[in-house]
Length: 211
Ligand code: ADP
Ligand code: MG
Ligand code: MG
Image (cartoon, rainbow, N blue to C red; front, side, top):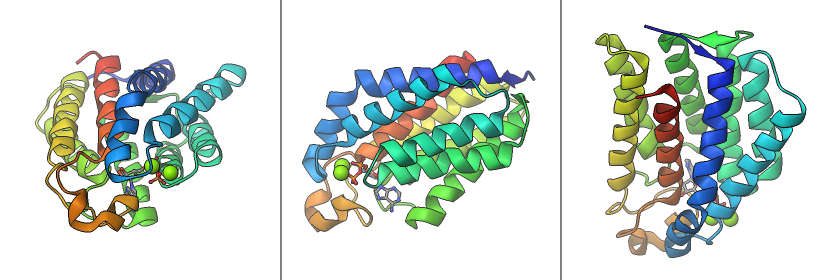
């Protein structure tokens, strides 16, 4: 069923950097409707800092890699998304341990721990119109596909599809967490910016794994 080496994980992070950089204006446009118009800038700045740091010191194990990513995001991105994405990667690293490659189950467990970290930090629940609404269905779909014997790349593709569906499903929701919640009913009718960046995170994973 294959394994995923550290080089693939770094390629994923680089692809995510490219995606949030290319879609910076789009992510900011989403955040301008229901937030403070900085989500694109936050993610592009954070991932640029992540890749800059990885170029000077390349970790040899997944725990060091994701710890570096998480610390850099926490320190270089302010607001809600820095600590939330930062916690996601820090928890991924803690769960991964000092390994140089993942199998499907280990990747799924690390991603799940990352999501649990987001929840521990931000207390989001399903339907609150946050990144949780893209990530949770994605990881559920990933688990289900792997459990059904789907190879890792195809399972990642299914997860990315579920993330995008979850992102799209945030549009009618009234936000209950983050800045968008200050708008109350007026937050309905717009996609959540964090769910859009999280869908990119899952889509780039699928692309890098070759789904
Ligand atoms: P800020 O709102 O501080 O400007 P960003 O614009 O970078 O930060 O990120 C906003 C995104 O963060 C939202 O679209 C939402 O997906 C996510 N978010 C905000 N609060 C929470 C929370 N408590 N739990 C999960 N995600 C959250
Ligand atoms: Mg914002
Ligand atoms: Mg902000």
